[in-house]
Image (cartoon, rainbow, N blue to C red; front, side, top):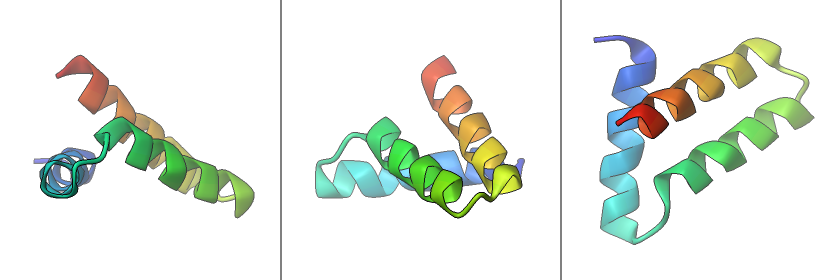
Length: 55
C-alpha cells in the first residue's frame, strides 16, 4: 500500500469521525504546501486527492 493511499484512508476515516469533507481537508493541506512553496508535498496531496476522487 502506498503512502498516499494510507494517507487517503486515514483522512477519510478521521473526516467521517469529525463530520468534515475529506477532499476539503486535503485541499487545505495542499494550500499549506503551496504557501510553504513545498512542491513535492503539494504533488503528494494532489495524488491523495486523485485517489479520493477515483474512489
